[in-house]
Image (cartoon, rainbow, N blue to C red):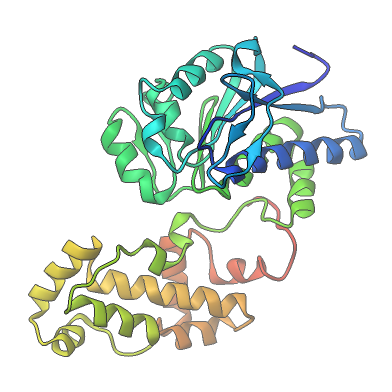
Length: 330
């Protein structure tokens, strides 16, 4: 190993998600430039892509990524990054990818998974007794498949000792920024975030993402029209009794349908849609008071409580993220 540099190995394999590979490469390479410009004295990053056979890997987009070396040639590394795949099945125990992860992890100072890469870490035994996260769509499967892992489905990334896991593909940037901050401190990490025009620390968790994207598709003749109506006008009267009357069913029956089809209650779904509407209003420059009223949440205080419960931040702090290119870690 080149001890003059901090060695980063990014694992690539056929079916890997392109952004899961590209994000770490971009963050660590940019960090080396930012750190050098500051003259902070820390080791620069030497980033290499390793594939099981040393040949190029065909990503999920159809674009090939060239390898710098075969995984068998990696003897020791400071940081191992394990990207995810759209085919979670190839990241379960017994696969060649998992075997390589297990072997490489034994001589790595720390290991980070991007998105569904957490499945490979879990299958390799690296998450046993640890907290972890993954893409919200696969969090339940991860928890069910590996009960020895404490899955926190709403986190953007989770650090438990030397093991890091992260949410969806773009969260690969977040977790790598956390690694850079661990190595070089917040100033360099902030410089990388500014260069890439991303948050150093995103407000909230995966709950911040589109309610429509997180709501299971349904064609239920009772529920589908109600979901469309709520999305079209979040500020309207969507109390459970009103929704039930609109659908021509009892409130109890409507609640049962909601739980069966969406996994939540009518009131919780309406609140989530209103929160999303309030976020969009704040992002477009509306005041906290106007956002609360126009979204249907009503008062400033209600908006603050909903933001605190779901996004772990305040409406004012959230809005400030869209008035500057970066923010200090809170």
